[in-house]
Length: 138
Image (cartoon, rainbow, N blue to C red; front, side, top):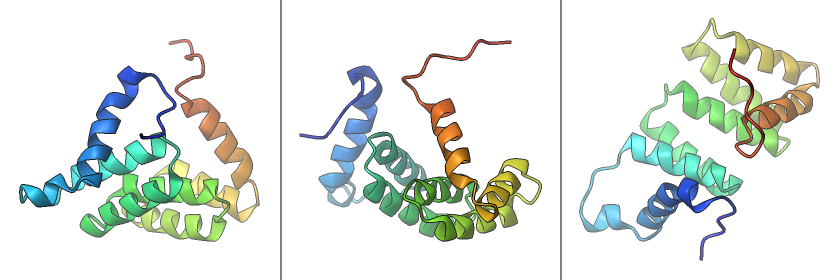
């Protein structure tokens, strides 16, 4: 059984994507590799807190589409979560080449350089936690 820790309505598509990939159905029906499926699968593992599998799937997505800033940013996020600031910085530098004017990337790189990455990461996780109460809409 998969380690699902969130409401069934939110995890059902995630569960199907993981089962699909784990069972190797894409090979069985000779379905070509899809960047979108790979990216979705990686995100599914990330939401299930399976960091090592999420990183592996994001790396496969990166091989398929090396200039995908969202893939690079997710890899940086996962590396920061594991305390790998140097590796996170490498992914952020690649993302910066794709999005040179993105202020958030610059701020994250600055936070890593000044040792503030842990604080920034904690704030980010708190703001994106699906179980936290929603922010008021202006």
